[in-house]
Length: 235
Image 1 (cartoon, rainbow, N blue to C red):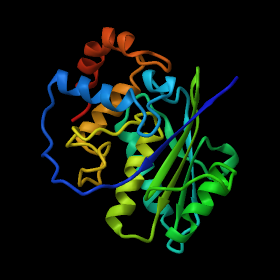
Image 2 (image 1 turned 30 degrees about the vertical axis):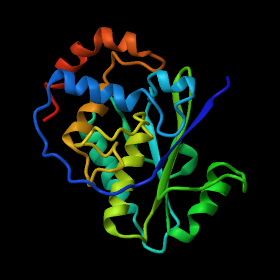
Image 3 (image 1 turned 90 degrees about the vertical axis):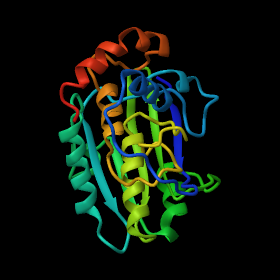
Image 4 (image 1 turned 30 degrees about the horizontal axis):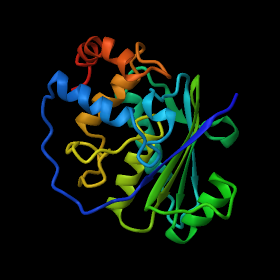
């Protein structure tokens, strides 16, 4: 089976003031879903931009801390938070890389390019732009592997922002959109938390009725029912 490789690089732009969290309308949630799940931040030419991308089985995260500062406890705490707050997603920390399908590398800036070239792409010709990145391998049966690279030594805001955005994007919502003011899936937002908006998006994506490979029209036929269901537990 041939897998397509998708990349999303977190290029943080000038920061804007985020809107406050609110109770979103069904149409706003649907629009947020379409803008993040359909599309790819840096590969809109790909056929995968037009279909749902998500894991269908357990996600096991191995935290590979290469940075001088040990950030494993913070990363593992966020993984546990995602597991608590997203129904339909079984995500947990793996103690052994051989047991994982999602690796999060925590690095210092000087290590960033080397890790991307040596560990992610196995090519010294690969460019390594951005302040952090995630790579997703996906096929007809959904995402099979994700790898994120998070920089530790350029401030707490950047570390937390990249940890949250790249981890969540590695689960499937790979597109960024500048209109999503309450989301980390917007490189101009000044957010470093798992927002209410993004909890809705992830719970919609991991609802049992949403499957890998669905196109927008197929999703559109069931999304109102999915949103109504998700509203029962996302607060």
